[in-house]
Image 1 (cartoon, rainbow, N blue to C red):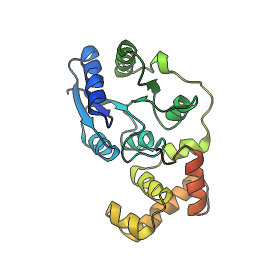
Image 2: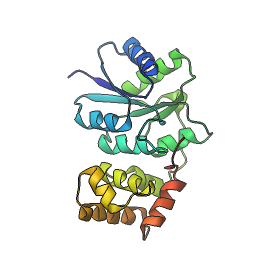
Image 3: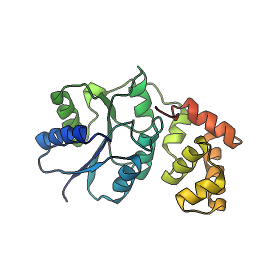
Length: 209
């Protein structure tokens, strides 16, 4: 089966640059591209032979590190390599906490990106983007382990949407929304929606402008 690499970035020129990098180290791989988080999640769930996801954090539909968590929930067995301009010294650690194998800044030279892609496709964690081995916070780990629908419901709650709005947007019933939120609150060990939103905000799931 042909290996597939998903490139998720809202800038077409940067997607093209990453596609060239993939082509240099894995000319046999099929590259598919997504410009929004929703499109990336759909492709991740549908594509067979998916071998690697190259993901930008700041995409339409993404808040904080939710893009990593959502793609990881869709395909937990597929490595995610973040290639982003996100600021902050802890960005790499946070990215790994939510399921990424590593973090590269967009201003890295092409050879560094190519080496990281080659290593990731080889089933290893890129040395250039390895972060500390400190034990992950258990709550962050639980967020990373939410199902795709649970994450979508949590993000909608974080956005201030009511159950009726969430149900309409996601195409499910209000009862199902409530069931998902109950499961989320149990996993995150919180008692209500406000606490769940506070937990999410503390984990970096905040609006990025």
